[in-house]
Length: 118
Image 1 (tube, rainbow, N blue to C red):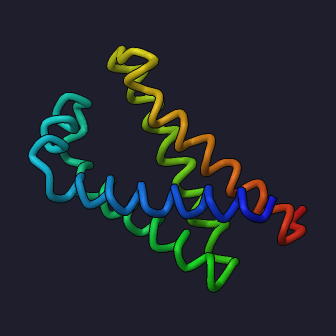
Image 2 (tube, rainbow, N blue to C red):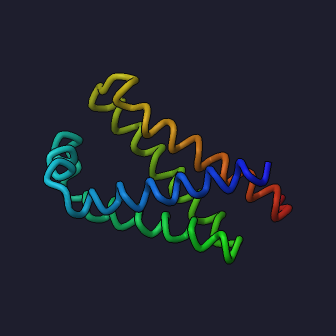
């Protein structure tokens, strides 16, 4: 189980760093956020994704960073799923948001068990 959670945390951290950077720098992402009708939240979304990514990476050294970071990313991706449903995207188009929502929920729940939080 230890290898699984490390892999999950690493995949999520790298993915959100890249995606968050893309939100801030990419013209394609600028157009996507216009398609979502959320252009004014693009920079905030990118910054939150990078912050969550850094928090997950810091969690390797300071494990308590993992809980708020993974919970924040779970909430962010859950909101992404809602946006995808609202704009009537296909399941395939929504699948990255669903995957990362579930991945970060898994990281969060394992963290709760690890810290014995009730």
